[in-house]
Image 1 (cartoon, rainbow, N blue to C red):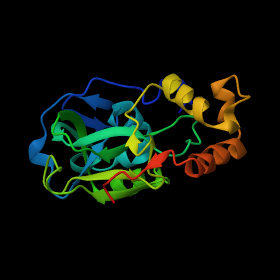
Image 2: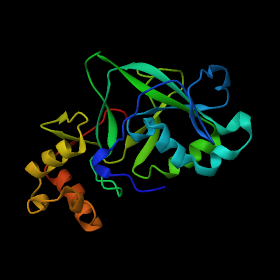
Image 3: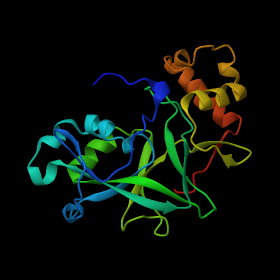
Image 4: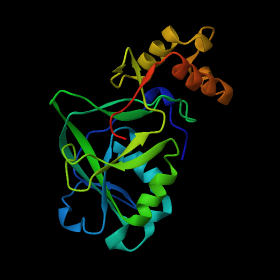
Length: 214
C-alpha cells in the first residue's frame, strides 16, 4: 500500500451501501448477512472503502460468507465529527467523534465486521478505544464507534468541527508555539518529537475538550 498524501485526509468517498471483499467494493444490499457481525460507525477515513480494503488485507480472503465487510448508510442525530487531540504517525490530524446538543441529522457509514475483521481493524486504531454508542445515538442496535484517547480539539470548551487538513493545520499554528517556525505543514509531522510537542501543548493550553462519549 502506497502512503497517502496526509493533506488529503480523510480521503473522502461517496457514501453508499455495499460490501468490501477481496476484489474491492461492490454496491449491493446485504442486510440479510449481518448476523454475528458488529456494527461500527465510521467518522474518518474508515468511511473510505479503499482505506478499509487496505486495512483488512488477508482477512478478506476467507470463506465467501465471511470475507466481505458489509457497508450501510445511516442517519445519526446529536453526533458530530471533529479532530483528535493528537497528530497521527501518518502526518494528519485524524477525525474523532463528539456528542453535541443540537438535534441536526448527519449521515454516516456503518461497517458490519466479523470478529476476525474487527480485531484486525482494532489493531490499526492505537489512539482510539472502540465503545458502544449511547442507545439514543446508535443508528442500529449495538452500534459502536472509535473514540479518541486524546479527546477532541476545541477552544473555550467548544469542539472544533472537522476541517480540511490545511485548515486544521492553520488553526494549530495560530495557537501553538511549537509550530511557530514551521513553514511546511508536511514537515511539522514528519518528526515524532514534534508530534509529541503538539500533543503536550494542546493539553497545556486547554485546546482539547471531552468528546462526551466515554
